[in-house]
Image (cartoon, rainbow, N blue to C red; front, side, top):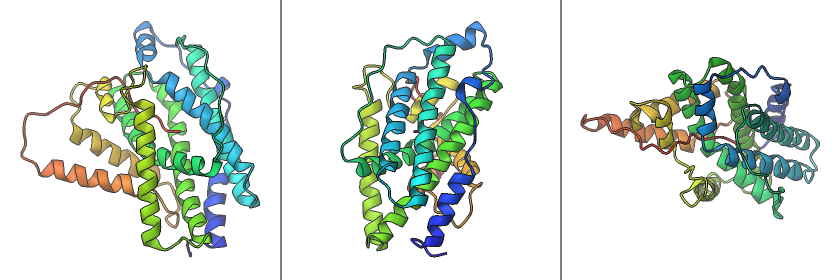
Length: 289
């Protein structure tokens, strides 16, 4: 299959559309939590930021879909917009059900330059989702909440994986069909967008954030007492491989973050063994879009 071809477009769009999962957040089997689990859930500091990101994503992706004239691409991107909005409804349902205090959220403002906003958001999802997969796996293994709660959120992580697989194929397809398919040029543009995505995420979740969440994978130590950087990276790699193994091998997948993480992981394995340095506690675990 030739990248940028009609066959390529049909494959990544149809794969995305056909794997859509129907559910309504309000009708999911939300479990009752005991006092300890409820207090732990309410203490997690990222709910406000996660809700804002998903609300903004739903509005922005839907607005971009409205500008896409290709019928198949329009259908797929519009579906992603509905899924992003559904993620926001899911988080809001959790917030309301478990009594998480949160001020009224401001209205969503759609960026004026909609395609660059969609592209940057896609790279942000590629970056954030990779670490979210690992953090989810760590929390699940640590059994910090009832399994019923993880069962609800596991398909949401699969939806994030669907989004980023669709996105990297869309990005490549668009670049090639606009005469910008020369591989070195695509690599440069990819690196530029990853840099912009990282900057945006640091701004959104950085120390300047009044909520104090901090965009850092180190917050996974909230869920286990013996987490090292090597173990965290290893779990991220493993969880990413597991979720990405479900996709047609002809489809492109995000490669840069897994590659860099593998290099870091192998480097840590080669270092002399010292007393384990646990990851700094900041009380946050990543969320995808």
